[in-house]
Image 1 (cartoon, rainbow, N blue to C red):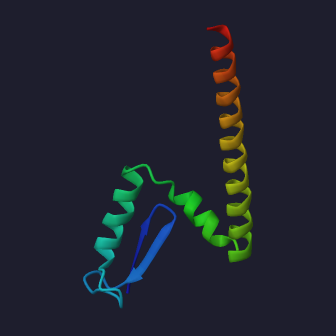
Image 2 (image 1 turned 180 degrees about the vertical axis):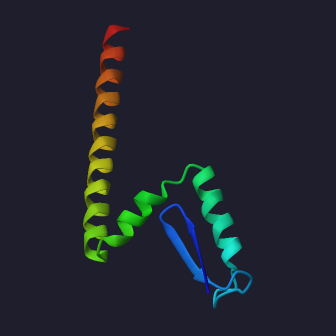
Length: 89
């Protein structure tokens, strides 16, 4: 069995045989390299996958709450500036 390392990822598989997914180790390496070239932060993905599902949901909920608060703040600022614009005309 051949061990191939790509960044922090190691693949254990015969060099030319596909695993149960039908993907060969070389195809996996190419996919990892393509993802990295596209700017995907693989280390961040790996770190997030080390968290439990409960931790990931909590992180998602916190990010969603922040995004909704920022949206509401933007709407409030936009409404306030629209009032100022209409008052100065």
